Length: 161
Image (cartoon, rainbow, N blue to C red; front, side, top):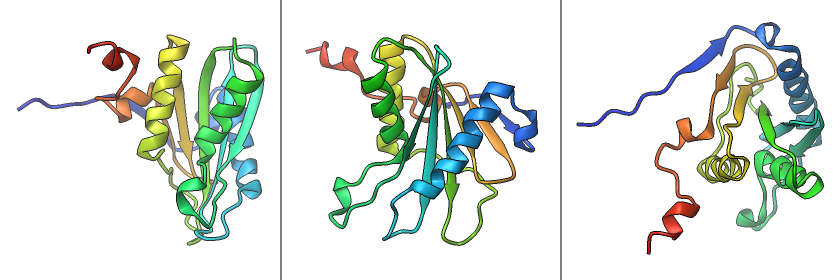
């Protein structure tokens, strides 16, 4: 049987982050307040760090027709690509405000967002670091979305036929 493994960093707090990663995590945490989540009350904020130093924010936006909503990760990445089409994406920070009040553990991107980040990595031709955290507590650093989605679908799959 084949086994898939990957390495990641699990930090006790945001104090262990580099200054640029700490900054975008702070921005993602602040962004959670702007999320539009009237149905789930699960607020997600995301901040994308670009190679030129710009930071682009995104939030989850729910819709009564559930599939129409957008996750914070895709919101931030879409905005970054729209505003800075030629800039490489260095990292994405994701934070939550959960309705339970338990905001000291990371939330991980959904499958659709993992696929979207994976495509952004293909476009970048470089890995994008994921910084995952609640409002407090542990911070997880993951080197690439492909670590969370090892058998992702990509452009090379379309060229096989």
